[in-house]
Image (cartoon, rainbow, N blue to C red; front, top):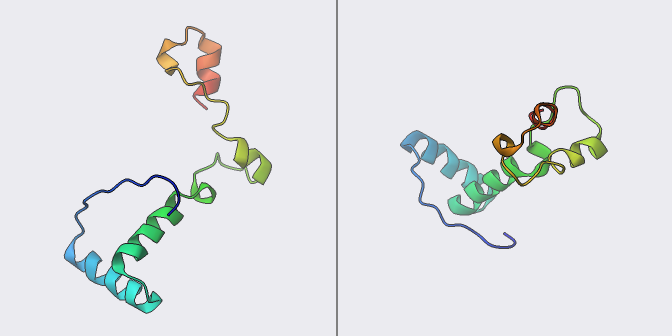
Length: 86
């Protein structure tokens, strides 16, 4: 893991715990490392949802960049609110 990390205590149901333990053992890593890797892979940019039909990598890399840092309800322009909601 790179950068700052956040520690969280999570609850995992027993059947899920057993399955993940077996998969981690098959990969030769600890259960903790296996779960961390799964979460990091799931959150990676390549797994973020994209609008239907958009496949160009250059376009996908731009999604979300232009969103303002102010709350949408603080914007008093209906057309801009519509555009930002997409």
